[in-house]
Image (cartoon, rainbow over all chains, first blue to last red; front, side, top):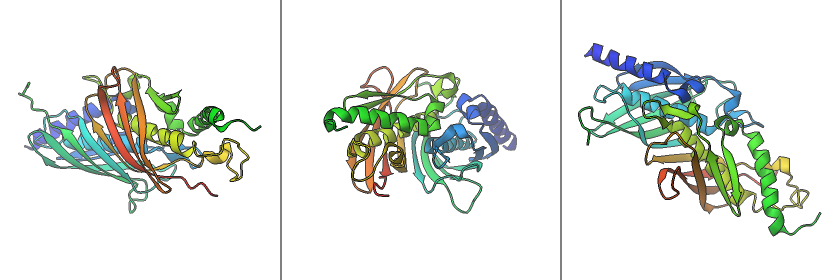
Length: 147
Length: 167
């Protein structure tokens, strides 16, 4: 079982590396195991949403949370490796502090035959106050099923 | 300097639009473009290989789609509600000028994206519809399509905090 989970984590890690948009945002997969994932990305001026405050655009935080949610689904024991997002809701608690690294933590907390459910939270370097929280539903594709 | 507000409006909003774009680096990073059509703002995301999220299909990254729709909602709300109600004359009674108007950007409270089909590796289009713009909060719905306007690949809705117009 352990080797199976490890190989899945390896697949997810490999998959993350070849995702052009995730590499473009310099996302790094910090932890992935058994339905849990942590992905972080550095502050980058190209992703600013308001030059007057230098705060990151919500879309950049959303991209990080969505990627992290997808990684959590992919490494869940009962999900075949590949998934895609069906529905994603993000709540913005506060602005991310400029120059801070952003970290997303996601948990795939329930999986049915066709849907995987995810909760995720994004932080800057102050871990006591979340920047954003998200919930998502992701597809579960059966390997044998073509219909 | 006194022009008819109705004919001045589009020009004025175009100026505000250009100013706002230059204030949001993430818009240029994604390569998002804007097209004014009367009172509507069509937002365009030209395809770029860096926007891919699943190289096997290939399909646009879910975060790209979410970002594109959130940008469309914010700019659409600014365009149709916030700026429209501003006096076109920069030195008006409330003292709003172009630079101050940049601070009048709605802030996202929450945003929900519905992924209807995978984003194909081609140009995408989106349009926001402001369902309600109150004094404090606004509710905005966005639709995004690629080949056909009627064949949506994503839709979203969200709540926004309206900018405070007095300093």
